[in-house]
Amino acid sequence: MANQNQASRFAAPAGKAPAGISVVANEKDGTLTITLPLAPAGTMSKTGKSQLLASTNGNKTVRIGDINAKLGVNCYVEV
Image (tube, rainbow, N blue to C red; front, side, top):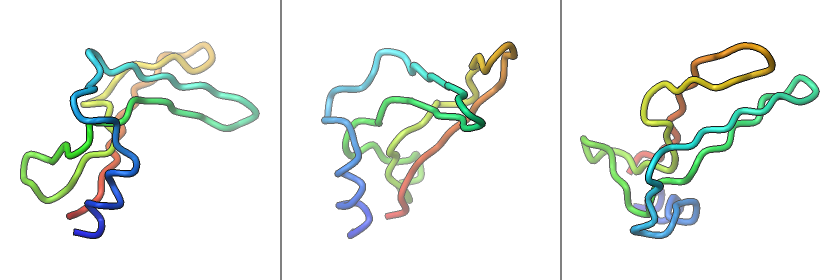
């Protein structure tokens, strides 16, 4: 339960789910920075074993320099 309470610090407010997942990837000085929205507070996995903090909800195409790359991110805590 402690992990679930800690996870809520990073979650978006309940009911504020983004209409579509907007993923931004920027490369600068050899570092890739990925920006994506936080999941609404209390978003649980389908199995109920983890609380989702952020996800691309599958692979997304992102532009990095002059190439199109596929990116998939899941950030969660076990509860």
